[in-house]
Length: 435
Image (tube, rainbow, N blue to C red; front, side, top):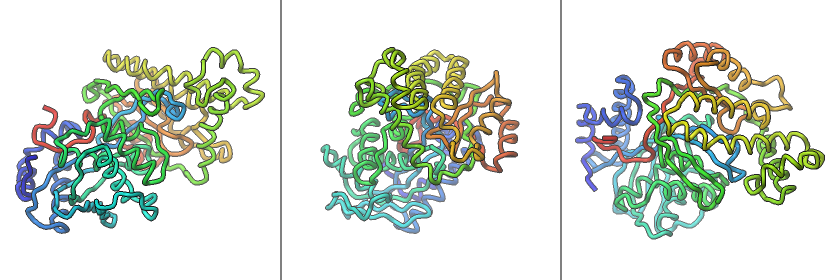
């Protein structure tokens, strides 16, 4: 483990010695590279104010993620295609001799975790402290070394946008423990699993594994949840930086209030159909038998459940085709599949607007505007859970300013977030990253 005093790291940041690494992580734009260098310098300054000057430190980063393919397929043990993005949680970290983990995040109170007691603490439910304690507990339970450290973190992962800020934080903690105390022996898949464990058992949220896996593994990643306890993960190599496209996440500022029952209805209805076919989830059933039994299923479960099941089967089959198109470098085929997926979500899954608030259709409007501008050129689809929130668009670089201007004219300044696919997941920031 090679660490440097904080003053030395600041000097190297000022001299541009990390610029190539920042280009690799955040995109080859001089303005963005300089902004990131300043961001890390400022965070080191905050670390020094709180934890002391000239501590030996390391820099870490874990990205947010975007769902690319497989909309509402994971809860039916289906396939998904996800990717890490160039928004991240970063941390300045230094080991301590106190057997305590202290993490201060910008805008939040410091969390202090005594490693002598890693049991579930009920008063930490739904709090960041539970995620830290849960990741540390799982690492130690499986035989990895966990010692004390001090960290100051900040995040630019957009909350409420489906980019998974909590998963990025979990991955950051796991990555720090792997690098600082275990010589990188905890691999990316394990780090993701530890994050999910912390979220399920300590935080109190029954999340799937897609968010953590995309953040930890990095780039495009195809995940098959057929065996939910042992998902099959494959990193999909594709150089998005040279694709000629930008990834846009459009926040329509929809109201998520009182939508829990609408979100819950999607897996519930699919599982009702699965039960009629002899399974607990749709992945355990036969697609051809489903089509034969539609008359009985629609009587028992209703037409919407039938349509949502059609979406599952189609989108689940679409994911490996999307991954294959990327592997072959065929971005045109990839875009066509993305559009197909979006149409399926709109027509069959029906998660683009809520029937009880028909006057609020921000996602539908964003998709309509995107189709008008990008038809024959780009791709567009609902992003994440749906009903309210965000859409995703792949926009040709030469159309980016026009697209952003049109979208923000309708949904407001700052509603169109221009991202890129990040080629690596949770990592320590080193001078030669990506070489």
